[in-house]
Length: 267
Image (cartoon, rainbow, N blue to C red):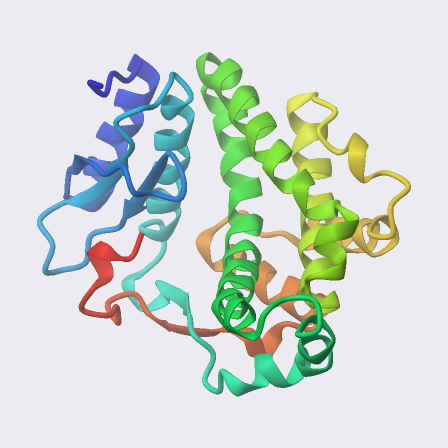
């Protein structure tokens, strides 16, 4: 399917090229976990790369705009301040913190399967932690500055919300380490409450009167009060969320150019 983008998104693409000195190249890639993903250009790369599924719908306009938001925020600060999240210095820390639950869950899930999903759990939680704070600011920017994108944005966030709600189920709770289960749902509470309020959509209703609302409200207040709207502010707020959730040792910060050799393939 041909990738057709509306004019406001094309305008954002031009803004990215002007800010970074590099255009975006679009590559069809069906084996994605999402409908679109971006790889921000390093010095040795001639272009930023946007991967997208062949089978997509008009929501792709919102997704591309969102990914461009990450690029613009990063290139809005001096090069020496462009740090990115990476694996923790000592990955054993994560396993030690959930070891008791892993022993419990091993009685419910075959060990071979458990070994396979542990990495998915930890990587997914860290991805959520290091993306949600800037995602909130990017979505507010899209809503405020590009009203033509609002219908696509609402559809996209509603789809994301439906996926997130699967994580509330009792079955997921029983077969997931408590720290991961609780942290993920607290972050979802904050994300959908703050964005729902901003874009005037009741995205957070399913999270009300859940065990996540008390801590979720505390983290939401911290976020609203202390967020500095910049890439450096994103990093600071990620660290604040991590401290609040007890996840400070689950990731580290490395230089923007310090990416693995398979950087382009890791989507």
